[in-house]
Length: 407
Length: 228
Ligand SMILES: Nc1ncnc2c1ncn2[C@@H]1O[C@H](COP(=O)(O)OP(=O)(O)OP(=O)(O)O)[C@@H](O)[C@H]1O
Ligand SMILES: [Mg+2]
Image (cartoon, rainbow over all chains, first blue to last red; front, side, top):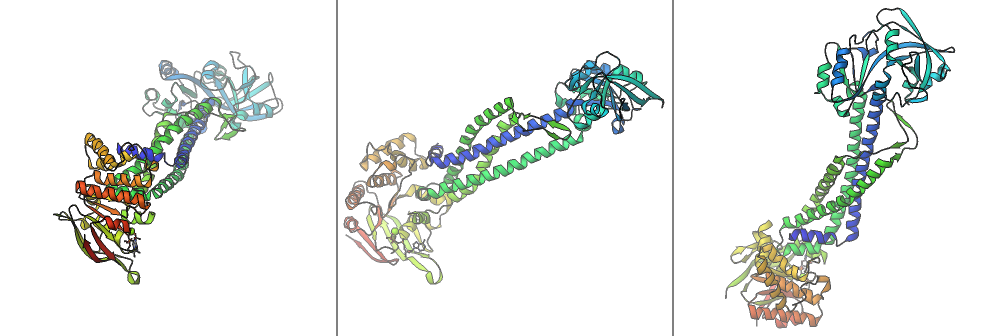
């Protein structure tokens, strides 16, 4: 009790120093919280960008299909799989697809690309195909409708209503097949690869054109909780996985994202460590200054019979008080800033393309509980650690010498 | 009368080689219960060094300090801290008090360290304040008290722990002569009325006149020990 009272009063003796030290700790806390929020926000955009654009959060396909998009590797009778998907509770949506490489020709030019046969409604619920439409109409039951990436349309020098010929080999025999379509809409996803090489037609038309029957190349999934996609113990996955059928979450589909997530968490760690290191040097310095100022008084206290541990404890407690004050100021500030920016976003000043995802306009930091639990605990621990050395120093003051020196 | 404290062949040197100074050199004397003793000598004669040795604030290079048969000089760590707390009262030249505590709390502080129960503690603080003539000023912080008043609080604190002896190193050095005399009279009265044992250092003529016993030291050597 006495210790707490002394520590508390000592903190307010040199108000300016206490204020400055708290400012240092408070701003470190606020910066680390904001930074973590921004990184989480950015990762969210990237992961979301990759999973929601077209890939989906998980995919089901025939073993080996993804290696080279070999269109002969398809799910011949997918109905049993679709039945399982229809009954699953964890899924938000799924999109069955046919994916075949083809030559795409207009009257002026020809290009190699990928033809996606999609179910318009299911696709709209799973990927961003409908949102990506910038001109014309989305796919409907019209058999000859086709959506084309904006860059491809530019290269082929065509627009809405123009004719396009798709040429490919049928999937099961090597017969040449051709189909005539009309551009009904232009889509733009952002990443260049998507916008210059993909066209989308109705899945029924695609199955007929490429002579697939009911076959599918790929089923893209979207979960209610996107974390489910990477769970190794997912019930859905074990029901579907089987001989020659693969079920993969987005981390497995895109090993690059996993590496990126790891890298960013390291960079938070490094920046945080450096920041906290500087902050703790400041704290050590401030504590030492406060000890030197009170050398005489601490020597008197020790002379009249205060134990060394009491003096050391006093210094540690003062540091703890500093940390508590800093956190109780820093947390509300950080919370306000975070909620503000989470609402209005931080302007990025232009589009940044990163790993095939376009970060555009504004970045929205993401609020997380750990920022307001873990980081303050770090600040307190760090301050306590920073106080150890000064506390030992103070505990070892020799009264005779300090009394002589200080007068 | 019983002996409270006994110094036996105390020696304390500073420096080394050619700069070696024996600040206290083979000093022996004893203090009896209820004595009012002044150690006197010119500046640099070793008064503070001697008092620090006797009070367990410093360790001698040779010799012993016996308090109730225990050798202080060999104690370390918590043992010496607790020993000082329970057996010795200290009054220094100035700034004796903890600035963030009121006069009342400063006196209470040492009893808190001793673990005296709250009720006894509060009563004793008030009693001590009254003894040093500061009743009603207990709530003031040291910065709100005059130098003389601060020294009185220091006396009150030194008494509060019920020590065997009170050591005072030039307690009046920072006071004007009138205030100093007042403090001395207070200490003398406490000595007479309550049998408190005082040992203090000074080179102040006025203090010497009030002392009952004078221990003269010069260049670290005990020159003369007179009782009046
Ligand atoms: N820490 C130290 N290091 C070296 N020499 C010291 C130290 N402390 C004291 N001395 C020397 O020891 C001798 C005695 O010093 P001390 O402080 O005990 O004298 P004093 O009688 O109390 O003097 P004053 O009346 O000025 O307070 C002096 O010569 C001093 O220079
Ligand atoms: Mg001295």
